[in-house]
Length: 77
Image 1: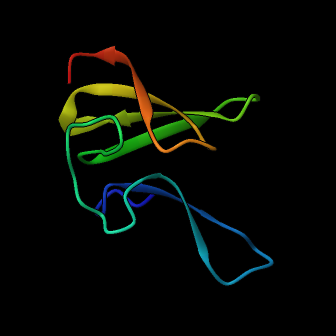
Image 2: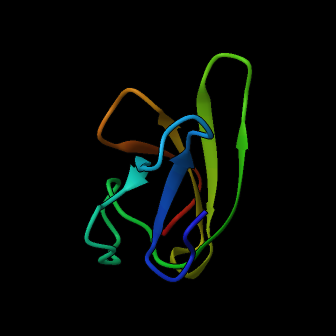
């Protein structure tokens, strides 16, 4: 998790690069369903859905890691 840059990244041990899972590459924050404002925690379930606690937007977003956006599952954010 890259809280400061408002994104979720995946590090592959056999490669030297990071893969964006959720958020924007440039780290901008926002309120739309493609962005975060200080993501604080996440859970990845067995179906590859990732639930992100989007702290300063007061919501939880659900992302399919193969998509470019999330769905607000809790909060009004």
